[in-house]
Length: 222
Image 1 (cartoon, rainbow, N blue to C red):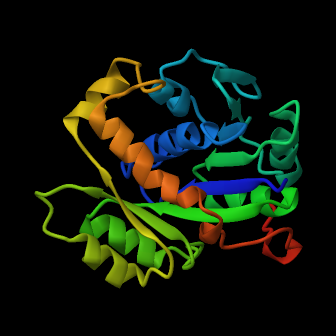
Image 2 (image 1 turned 135 degrees about the vertical axis):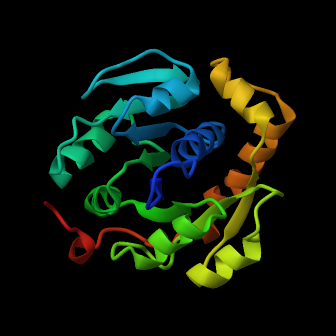
Image 3 (image 1 turned 90 degrees about the horizontal axis):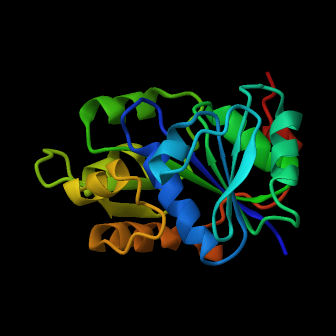
């Protein structure tokens, strides 16, 4: 059984990367053992669980564990987390890391099949940051949000970024915000949360894999 890594990235704050990673991890956990690797406690707060502290690993739901990195740039440290996160090899690894090269390095060193995901809102500034980012993977799938008041469309996002893979639209609503604020994301049956999970489940299809296996040439260790 090969492990599939969903590497969630964004090029500026406030894009919804952590929530997307958490929802995707919950969707993945319904299909097999899943490890969510993050470099801050925001993911734990989003999931509605306690604080672990750097370097800790813990179960948060059926089939889902969370590992908090200690901020190390060493790709071997990140790969070790992937190995230690499960008694057996995880079926899915989801990363919520602020440093894009860290996520890429982890997936490459561990030899995972990789599904790179860029999370971006329909904002001019966000699109500008993404197009100027030197480390942007142009093959990455894009997750954006259904925000009717935005001047930019989902099509605009795909056109500007020249998306080659999936462009998924997830709900962005006050209902999801209420669920997260109440600490009830895990196990939630709220309609918008389920719609969000269903949208991101498309990333779990084998056809979504962009990088297969180990390619050391793509690792950029600090």
